[in-house]
Length: 275
Ligand SMILES: [Zn+2]
Image 1 (cartoon, rainbow, N blue to C red):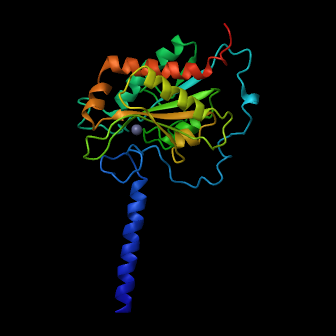
Image 2: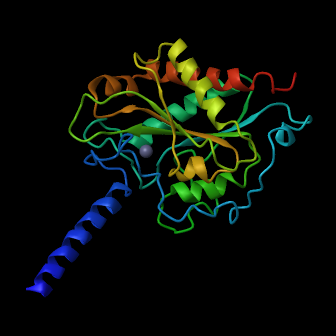
Image 3: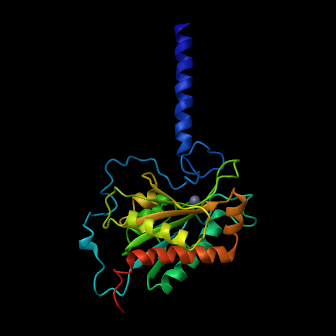
């Protein structure tokens, strides 16, 4: 009798543990338990209590990391989320597309708009080739952690990753989120003010009827593990009809890209060297 009770308790504990683990696994339409949307494929679960080393990062003050004078401008790295065999979310919602297609479309537009604003821009990938060394598992997936490691080899000032969200069976959930890491060691500490500037620009450009949720979040590899100020922008929910229609609209993508690029410019304008 006593033994049976123990067995029942063990199963109960195992079930609770499995539930917790499932909350931190890949991008899924069914995870209603996630606090901030369900595009959690970029979360990683390893120990973060001592992560200031291992990926070549040194902490410096913002003053020390002001752009060198010989540089013509600020360098921004734009990351189209997912890609290759990792389609992300959106299956059954985005017509012939998946999240990886939308993120690439938006990232390319953002690149163009940033160049117009005077920035130098690099992409983590162009949808056809993973950078050399980026696919360390040789599985044709450019994982979030692999991206962070790759990004840390780049001489850049700011990093932004583009994503599409999904939310279970509730199609009323909509809007954008902008994730960043405020209290984490970076070579500069601009993550929060850049996120605020982008959010303000998206609102002033009237890209969405709702304001952008700004979220200081500590489990996203591409915002936490990257060595410079970083953001992850969820541009909308493929499961919401309005967001879905927007994301499939080229003119809406253009508006979003311009708003984000202008928001980044608004933050950096006093740091851009006169040409
Ligand atoms: Zn995603």
